[in-house]
Amino acid sequence: MTDAVILATDPPQTATELSLEPRPPLSSAVSRCTTAYRNACKTEMARGLKDWQAADFGKKAFRDNLPPLVGYENVRDFIACIAQAILLNVVDGEEASKLLYAAQIALSAVSKQPAAPKPPRPATKASREVPADTPSPGE
Image (cartoon, rainbow, N blue to C red; front, side, top):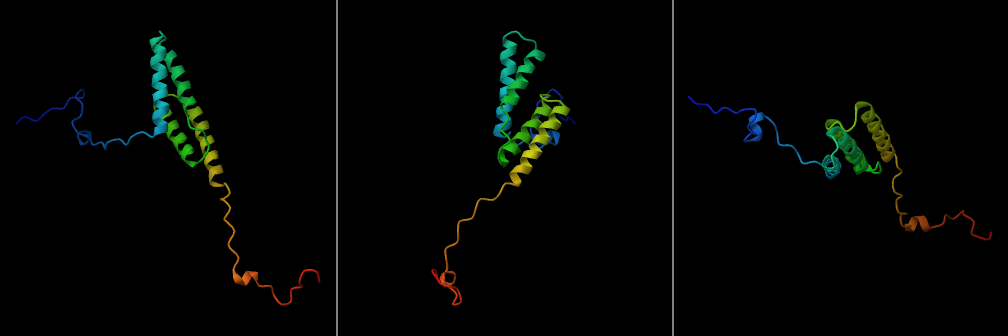
């Protein structure tokens, strides 16, 4: 009996070999931040900086590409970017807590924005009629 042996160094043939579901694609905001981080690190390492020095430039590039905390979609993307930043060690726990708190406040403000004013309803015949006991102008 010859069973195939999958070594840890062999790439999995299918996603189910490791009982993992395929990952969904990164959001465009997360992709933008991650790409900025990696590009900055590569650029600085090509200039001769050590990897830990280049990482500082990468961290700045990541932060510079965070979406603004304006509107629901941006806040959602900001939170996703911070989660990715935690995974990449771009931010530490304390800074991540502050950034996520800022996102929570922004999300709260977004949900409490006044609704757009409703257009005025057209006058109906009943609303145009003047009650009999209402004085006419000039009386």
